[in-house]
Amino acid sequence: MEAEAAKFIGAGLAVIALAGVGLGIGNIFSTLISSIARNPAVQPKVFPVGILGFALTEAVALFALLIAFLILFA
Image 1 (cartoon, rainbow, N blue to C red):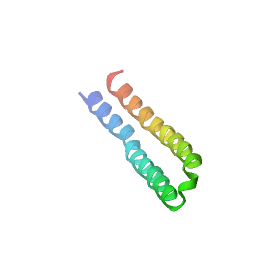
Image 2 (image 1 turned 90 degrees about the horizontal axis):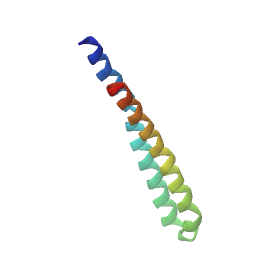
Image 3 (image 1 turned 30 degrees about the vertical axis):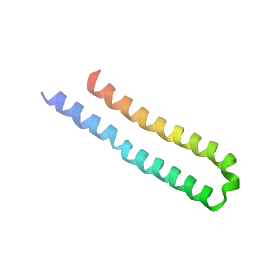
Image 4 (image 1 turned 60 degrees about the vertical axis):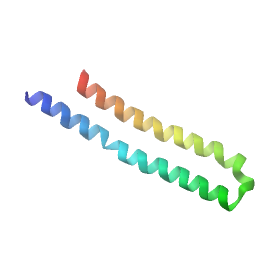
């Protein structure tokens, strides 16, 4: 019984990273929209960098979720 409670606590701690990921994705897209609104000519250069930042930030979320599932089900 205590081992199962420890699993839940560990999985909850592993998922805390998702809060940072949400803030990071919001920051990436707000900055992207702001920069394109200020200078629309840079859109072809800035947009791929924003999508790359989104993908790398989302990868952190997937790793955190993977760790939580490993703690719960392994």
